[in-house]
Image 1 (cartoon, one colour):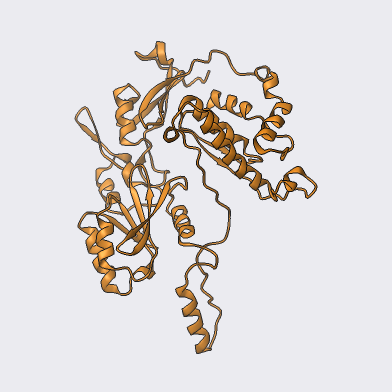
Image 2 (image 1 turned 180 degrees about the vertical axis):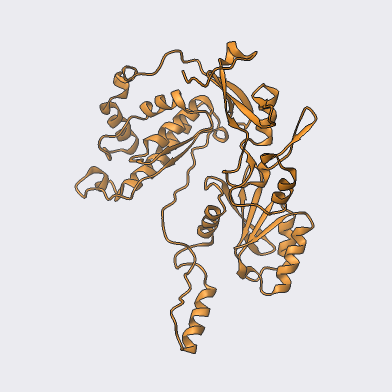
Length: 388
């Protein structure tokens, strides 16, 4: 056992020993206004970093990309404090306890609870010699699912699922950098269906071409990525059919992203003396998207630039004839508008939404007057506005 687990409290019999190795506040995390809140403990006010004046500046927008915030949301802190997970040191720093046999977990409904670890012996390779984990069984699994032996040396989903049971929480994000046929995604969905968890997955795979003589190529899969995407679709449908959970309680949806250049047309700054060429370049700049790209592609690029998870729900909405996209963050919503010639009536409709941050493209505003009026409309409700 880690030597750091040297403390005992009134929960020792259920939770085991604990250690104090993490402060609740950090200044190396990406700044998020919703995580920069005040806490009151025994009549004393606490803020991330310990300086109330500095916190006021941050809340007014004067902060770095990485700055002081709490690691836990207010709801998680309230649960942790009520259940004995919080310690205030003599120096005034807040620490969270790490127990040997218990963690704070969250169910599919978003409710916090204490999860206890019941395993009493360390896992060994002997646990996986059962025939269920064999390559033969894994080949049968993917062949039955895909209708052909589209992948060689595939891992059985039951193996990955069993490994996750030993080290993954019910709301963990599972990353597989060598996804192959997407066995990990299959296993995550299976485990969620079994215990009602809310785990998510990120699968990364190079678009390696399949051999033209292979069963995969003959079945229409030109790259390994295509195999993985189709497997996730089919596995999701099969799991939904077999799961006792209702459709709304079981999420088997996924998004597909690929690395590419920016969606924005790059300005041609090659020196020129041709007036006609300058006019052409200005005209081309009005069509700000690279050919073949859509506004939604740029919305996801904006999410990356602002540090928003790509897993968030993005919904298209119309406001007085103007299209915008609302990004549904659990702590705050973000509205992105990229349409030209936005009207103030559209802005007033957008202002009615429960949105914390509004991101507009420069091209949205036909003149400075509409821009300044938009700023004033949003400012009245202390809403944040950014230009992209």
